[in-house]
Length: 199
Image (cartoon, rainbow, N blue to C red; front, side):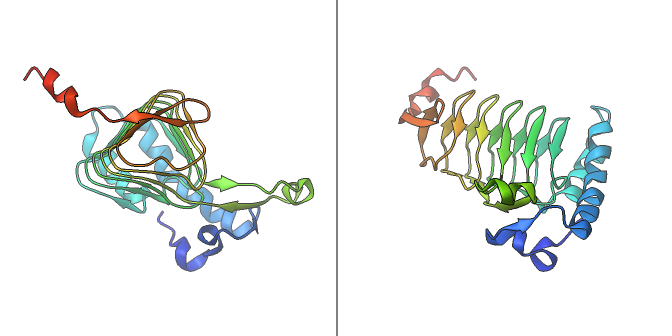
């Protein structure tokens, strides 16, 4: 099921506090999860079925995308935007309460988590299930290493590499290698890697 939350639930995308236990929202959210469940149950060689389900699940899917199973997303991918040629490895976890955008030819390693949901510091508000969301935007030709966590509101620039195990809490510019907890820029990308190509 595709749910046009921009029209029906604009508060998901506005950054305002809302009660996440809204009964109607929760019911429709569960419906969004059905295609993801079917996607995760596909045999590895059911390429056409997987591609069709991915387009059913997600807000937008470009040409030539491939997502390995399994994937877990709060809204079943309803707020996932994939450019052309995106590759996502096994066990992707997306808290897609608002939009996660992944640009053309970006590679996402295994067991990566991308979260958009945030909760207030006030414990009383948290006890009433209040939250707010901030989108995550990943540029083109980015490489996200294994076990990376990307926090709400982060933007990662084109061509950058995020090293395995990093926790990305702030924006990362284009064209850099960034690593660590919290993730920090280590150095610019070095294009001399091209000299090692064997074919």
